Image (cartoon, rainbow, N blue to C red; front, side, top):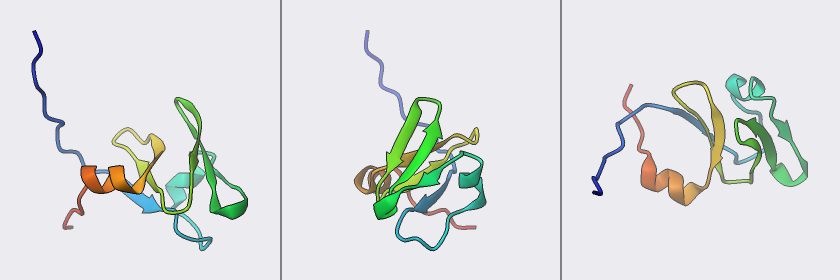
Length: 82
């Protein structure tokens, strides 16, 4: 039997790879490295992942860091009022 589920609302931190002006400190902890053309390579639990310019880089609820394409990010997340 198939049962439908809704994802629980969680708050994450995210930064968009838009330029070469720096990145958040938590990205240093992920042993990330910047490549030519603004590409960032991130060590994740699934291996090395690539974040192109315009991609979002997310820090999840357990501190995990991973890239997300802009269209998926927009469809999945919304800003949180602090």
